[in-house]
Image 1: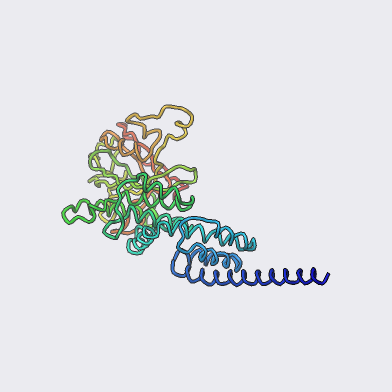
Image 2: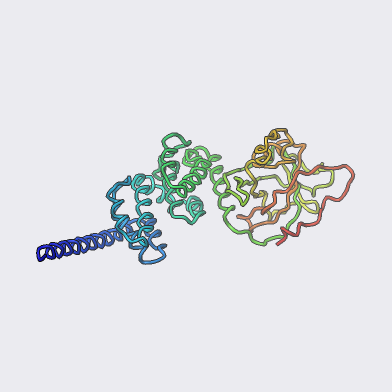
Length: 381
């Protein structure tokens, strides 16, 4: 009996010693993980967002457990399983972040550096508050960003870049895709050129579209009807937009025009191709000659889902205006468009802004009837 009790006592002593050793090991991992996290701004942000000490401790242990690793393994899983439930979520977050970052460390570091020097990239990166979105955005910037800033400068997606994207978690994939859309709308070869000023201006125009899409409008003027005639004088700059509340992809568009010398009349004959004017006055020298608006990329999604043939006629924009058919429609000088606009800022930064409504096609008449329609009170705010 004494031998059995002694054996039990030794077993309990060993178990207690083992538990103490494990606790010390976890404490050491937590201390190391806090140091590892402090070296990466994204890891710091994730750690700071931990809702309580237990989650933060789990995060620190995870950062240490995954230090330098690029794939999951049984060792990390054993550590995870040994933690209290309250710490496991933080551990999982840290390991997931570390593995994705470590596997793409150079690309992520390059992309983050680009965001620190390029205001447009920085603003687009902040469009989503998820830290994993930022990580995916940085990785993509390292691939598709400006080669003058250290990026690879890829000009199209392919199996390699898509493989990197597909290995990321969904939030990081969203950031990756947004970064691709931004960078592929910018021509870095032209921007870097010293002999193609049009290219530099064109890239700058794309940048301004993104900046305008993200800054609030100012009540510089009231809404007024602006009539524009199609033709060669209209120039469209179109970049990737967002996913709206209806789940549709949108585009941000800036339409540059030539101001007409006279107010537009009911016949439309006072407008030359590519010109715009108000019904009661001309566009003033203190006013912009560009209209900014957001429009769905493809306006016939419902028809396509229901099996209805897509309208590809020259007048499709009259029924289903979108970023693809509206510029084609307004390439014809026989076509007109009516916007309700107000100026969003003083020159040199201001543009005419349409907010939620992109207007509609306008048909000139020969009867001399009044052009001015009542102001849409839903938009006059």
